[in-house]
Image 1 (spheres, protein in one colour):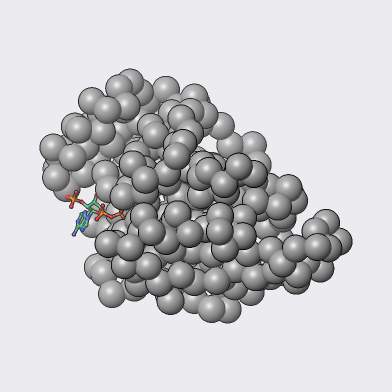
Image 2 (tube, helix red, strand yellow):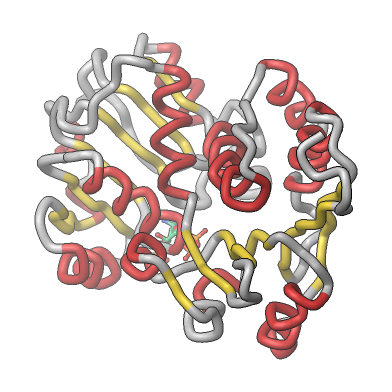
Length: 280
Ligand code: ATR
């Protein structure tokens, strides 16, 4: 056992938080690695975020994840925010350092890239134009990670063009904002299509996008994971495109957290995937 003298603690702060699958995911790893520890849902309202984060060292937490609505709000509270989290503008994971200070990082982009590599091991970001639909919080991590992996051209389509333009200004090349009405034409010669909107999620209508112009060799990724098979993914598979579901992003973003908190290489196995899928 790596830490026989200490009960390991981590959790996820959100408001609300009880829907989060992270406790199931992380507690699977505690069990799998035979470690004494637990990962808890922490229901923290926005006005208590700073207080809750400051309490982590005193409570002997190794760190925590952040979910809606705390990812952006944590940036000015954390002692040091690394370059990735700063550029994305959001903290997904907090690490308590030995001196009790807090380091904020963002592992969502890592999760996205590795979810693709899981399903398509030979995939490269620079294989051809990428089309990303959506310019919200989730999209920023996706865009950052694609640019970081060397994507040469990212066509960013959003219903509200100004939001896409703001990200084009923020990240610069390779991002090019594309108007909603031009979304179908943007698919021609694309190598990767990503849905980074909430469309297709349970309770939401399907993403309003016709795939006719998309090359059959293109990969289609959806960040939505409830349902597992979104209308977009089903349509892509029907016409022969490779697909990547949203669950992998959630699973893989948790790996660097374990490395930082506990010094352990946690693995995304078929068993873990099936466990989380059984809760969806
Ligand atoms: P998140 O942090 O999960 O990305 P968000 O910041 O609310 O959430 O962003 C949601 C994304 O889904 C946005 O890109 C939004 O488009 P707008 O910027 O125009 O709001 C997109 N979206 C939501 N409803 C949509 C719809 N009916 N059609 C197209 N895009 C939609």
